[in-house]
Image (cartoon, rainbow, N blue to C red; front, side):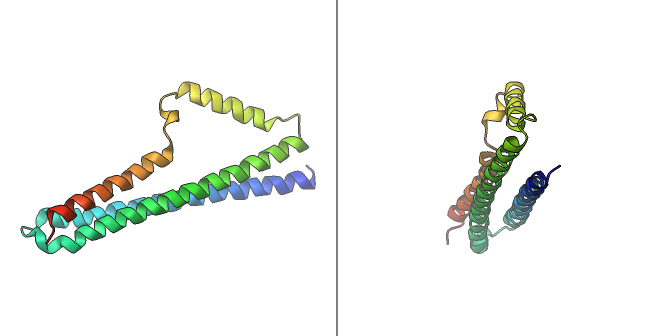
Length: 148
């Protein structure tokens, strides 16, 4: 391979690694949010006098809001890396027109959408964001129920 191709492939690898890192961060944040929220809800369930736990209901609300904001930001970074990767593939297509990477990607995308027509319409970000919206809703419900 020529030097330009090697450079582009290295950037593709770095972009792919960054996407994996972003997903790992998102998963870690979701796990922490779920763990903290579950622990606090567990305290509410085991306590007879829940009014003393009002500050904890606010913590659930804040943790859910943090998870929502962090997930939205990480999705933005994911889209950034995806656009960067697409530009790299376009450049590889220019250097090696016989390979037709863009054509192959589009064919694979069409095939995937045909096989998974229903779920492919749902954005993964909406699924992950909905988790944090539910946690926020639980926080709001517990805050209202335990208002001093």
